[in-house]
Image (cartoon, rainbow, N blue to C red; front, top):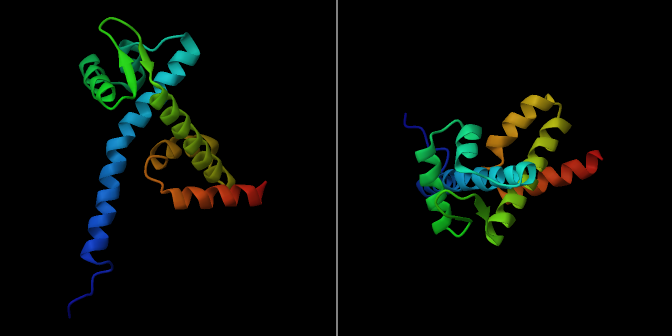
Length: 143
């Protein structure tokens, strides 16, 4: 007997398209957030610091920074610090807020603080606006 698919092909394609988009924006969100954090902590963001924080090589950071420049999120010149554009600042702030909501939701349902912090780092990039809205509603009820 042939089983019926749980979702249609179109639904499946939509789901995986959303996941692909999330993966593409994940690195940009992580980088602008880290650049913002470094600027707040030390007054500047350097490629060498990003490489150290992310555990990647300098060429990887340089390639990513070039991509972020093309996307209008950062400004950088060779051998100079990296700065966020206005768009980059907005993305960093939005990413940070989303991370906080996801982390706070996980803590509210009983997840250990350290685990919630780690899990939020992955979930924040894939959570839909609808789900995030429900997390916010839940947190208001719990407050």
